Length: 59
Image (cartoon, rainbow, N blue to C red; front, top):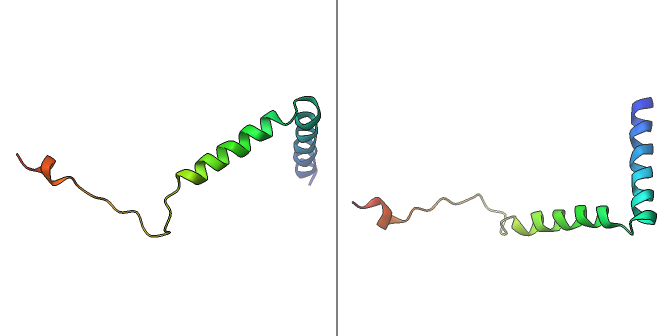
């Protein structure tokens, strides 16, 4: 239980430090990377489709 409380305290201190001392630069970068990762996900929700270029398979 002490380790969990320590991790929560460290996360809270980092957030406060970033918010007040750095104007939220680090948390902004993390949020931006999550948005970019979400934008890279395929839309439609179906299984991934593998396609082959038939011209490359011909000799």
